[in-house]
Image (cartoon, rainbow, N blue to C red; front, side, top):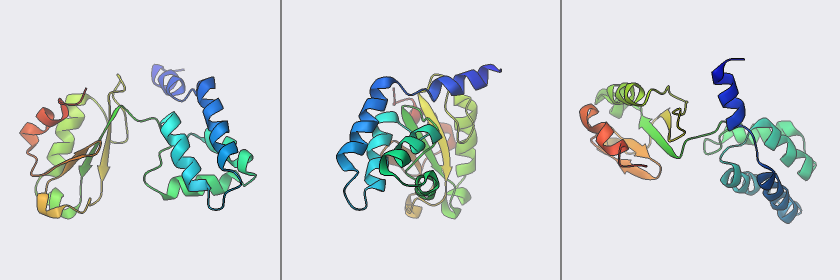
Length: 166
């Protein structure tokens, strides 16, 4: 098995205390109407992501098909099935941002952090995503780190922004 595979397995391991919290969230909410999305949100806050084994546990606890849980997780962009770093970097690749060189910003981040789009740095500090229009076209090009939005970002200065995040 490659080192990359071992690393992914370690990142997907769910500690027992998190399983207990997941079970508690399910138990406290399972009889409420329209509960799937709130449960998924709460569980993702506990685990940081929603891998298949967590989705199956939720499905079993709610007595619903796992395919229903999977469908909701994959439909909504705020859910993730892969672990993410402590800081999530999103680079807008919508038309206005792309015209103003957001592709160069994305490449600079990839090179400097040694991470691919959709990946996480080796130290789990950052995850990187390329996203379609964030609705801030007047600020193009836009980079979002966690909940902070940066506009008019220049490729040569993007790492100054990112380095602020421990």
